[in-house]
Image (cartoon, rainbow, N blue to C red; front, side, top):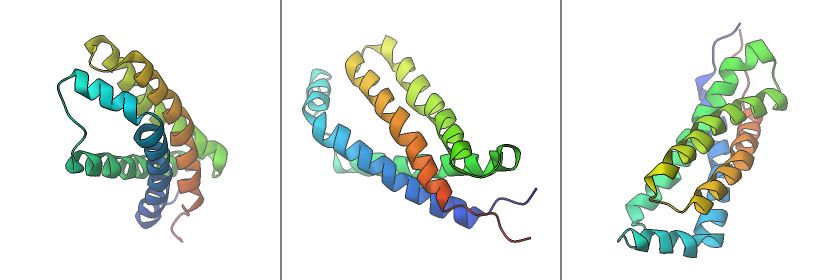
Length: 142
């Protein structure tokens, strides 16, 4: 079992983060922008600030790095390749895309349909981003 190649985890994670950011921009920033604005207005909040947008942007890169790290960690047990990467991505989705959105429902802050759409979009983009990021991951030479 080799050591994790952290340079490749970061590189692959950034690549995964690009995938996540593209999905989030198109879905949440374009297709659902009016619904998110209405939900924010209902809370007495305005449009997200520039610093909030930067946070979302950075968050997707951190999520991508975490997903590729998980892929690197389980790779020796499950074998290299897209199937293992998809499994890592599904687990990350379960923690962040599913459980987080599920935990938000009782608060009533955000409309349930937006939370459900967010979880479904994440179900697609997190495993896909992990597979793309894992493509860049290689073990360090022994």
